[in-house]
Length: 336
Image (cartoon, rainbow, N blue to C red; front, side, top):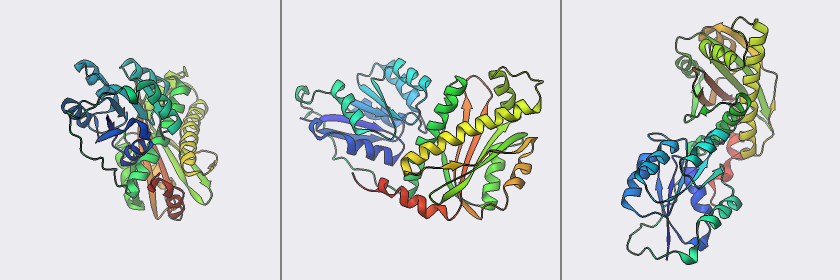
């Protein structure tokens, strides 16, 4: 007898971690999907018993996938495994019919507890009428590691922002790139478009790994943040600066905690520095020149539900940090 399982996640690392964490007694027959549409197609063709579902994915995210599963009346246990750990995200997936929510990176003890509630291996009927191919554990690349590590860290930052302002924060997929300085400046211009922005920079370091974080908010975002916090539109610049610093501290600190917990590094932050208020992105770029020749960046753009708030967050690591960070995360390349 076997227990058919579908794991849906765009991250090869996450798919591997879940597959390797499934306990042997359930005799799992595993298939993989890389986004929601892929999962739904497979659900139409195979009688899976359980679906492990990520939330932040291309094509169709986990929320949309759950909605369609509910609409179609597909009978399957859905366990959400996600870095998006906001309270409102958990409430939403449970309302859509998910049976459990597990925070990334996956904890095997929590997984086993969830499976005890959902699976009775001895009581499962044989599935010999359905043919399943042998599972192919995904092969990992360096970029896969960094994308998933960044995904977990941006989820921590979104959770902190969501709790502070009592909002729901939309999480897109992060971008991970290695840039020359000129390419970094082009990326910054693309982020800000033609908007006037306010920018805050904050340095960080830990065990030889160092860099700078940059938080950008458009003028329309600042105005909406002030309304969210009941700060008058005509408030003085000092109140606005304090709000910007609060947002930067929340996002940068929680992201670094998420990254540090995975790399086993304790990061220290310098005080945030205001790069400019209501200025062009070129003014911000001028303030960041001279720090980097080539840099690896983690980039994400958060938006807040029901508002025009968009916050761009970039983490830029100095060249010398990359071999150290590679070494700290090398355990993720290994089988476990």
